[in-house]
Image (cartoon, rainbow, N blue to C red; front, side, top):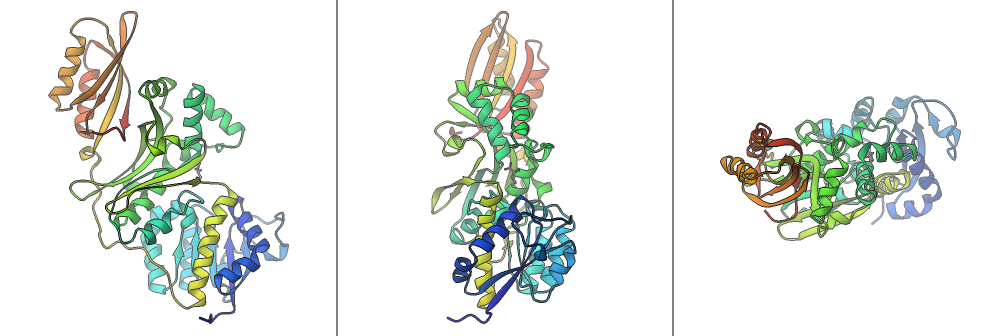
Length: 431
Ligand code: HSE
């Protein structure tokens, strides 16, 4: 099969940690990548927001006129690694309107305006690829969109934020508290100076929206994702997890409910050490997929960083270039199922409740009565004493969020309950 186009010109928007690695690899591996793509790849222009030299990048490629990249008639494919909503959204729409295929790593943009952008790409007959937007180097988007296209995915659980996984790993392995580990991670450059998007789960929520959309052929946006971060996880919570042969992980979860609705959420979860996701340490990411025919699959790798993210972008570039060279497009997004989002209150999980109570007769019976009144069944109770008070760790069978909330409110109102320290959802132990 011979290609119609001899040369494919690439324009890039952004040249930061990821963009500079894309540019480096495009230059060093240009010949190999061209052979794999079926057309000669040429990096023609890089749009940057601030002028100035970039190490290893020929000055002639750089321009601060971002629009000139998407309006250049010779450019066939635009790689967007600016991040943020605007001007990335407008620039991508302009590129698509000019019939350019687009590759983006911008999870926040796709999780907010994906519907508009994918529709525009579809109408223009161009590709909009985004492997790098979720879990960096891990080939999860293509796997879900193409390899699993013939299966029914029922649940996706992912460790999709390296910063929080690094912090939780240190807390677990070194017994340190959250603030201490975060401060050290910032000093070492593993956490951002403003870590809010990572530690409060917003970064993972954008990725959860993209995974849920793909898994369930529906459009899910970031504002539909229930989101709880890890800033309230204490050294005592980690110690409680350890006692139960478990770890605490921040998970992005997208699952089908019994009513065929999508539950999509990000929150800390207690996982038994035997669960495949429990062994994912430090800044690594992993996505665990359950589907009807394939069963369980696990994808593991580096979720961030210049070169790993560039690997995903270049994989998209080879695919998109082949489509351009042979005048076709790849798989687009499918949202035909159009499933509703399940209200959080209806979603069922198992829970761990850690509370301090007075250590005297009748206390356990009183506590058990409160659970029974809300119809929340107790799977196990562990007690450790200290003076006049005792710490109770109660693990429930699967219960709805609403029933659990009502139970916790009733517990807080009891005289014998000194404090409800924490409530953590539990996965992987069997409801
Ligand atoms: N900040 C993210 C993380 C990487 O810590 O994994 C980019 O999504």
